[in-house]
Image (cartoon, rainbow, N blue to C red; front, side, top):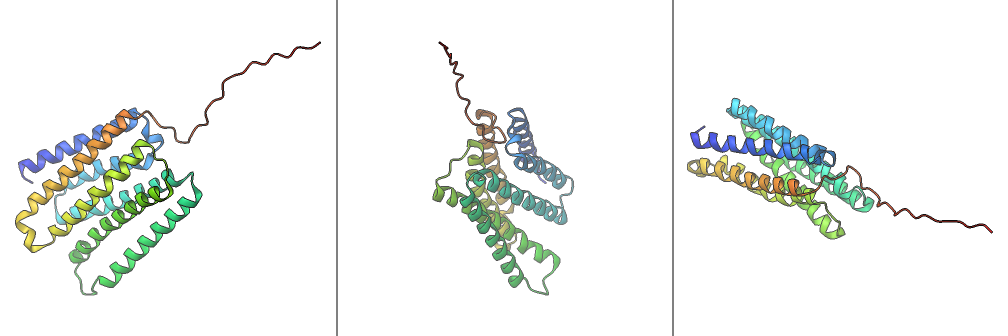
Length: 230
C-alpha cells in the first residue's frame, strides 16, 4: 500500500470508530443492533485486510463484508416492515427471489474448469450486486406502501445502495485488464465514496434522538375525577 492509501485507510477506520461510538452513546444500537455489528465488523475486517494485504486476504475481506451486508438487509426488513405484515411478507418474498435468481445465475455462468481465483472474482461482484438489488427493492417497497421511516434507517437505506453500486462497478473494473492503469484511482474513488456515506450516517445518528427498540404508546394525561355522593 502507498502512503496515500495508508492515510485514507487510517482516516476511514477512525471515521468508522467514531460512528460506532456515536451509535453507542446515542443508544442507536438498541434499535439497530445488526447495523452496530456491521460497523464493528467493518472495522475488524478492514484491520484484517491491512495486516493481510494479499489476494486471499482481500477475498476473505470481501466475503465477510458480503455477509455483513446481508445481515444488515435482514435487519432493515424487520425494522422497516415489522409493523406492516403485508409489506413484510412482500419484502421477504422479494429477498428470497433475488437470492434464488443470483444463485442460479452464478451456478449457470461458472465454468467447471474455472480456477479458484476466477470463481471468486466472479462471485464477489455478484454478491455486491445482490445487496444492491435487495436494498433497491426495499426502497421501492417503502415508496409503494408509503411506509414511515426513522431517520437513521432511512439514511442507511438511501445512502448504502448508491455506494454499493459504486463498489460493485469498481470491483468489476479491478478484474479488467483495460482498467489496470486506473486501479489505484478506482480504489480511491471507492474509499472516498464510502467515507461520504459514513459521514452522512454519523451526522444523522448524532442529530437523531435515541430510538427505542420498540415503539412506545403515548401516555395519556392523568385526569382526576371527583365523585360526589349525596
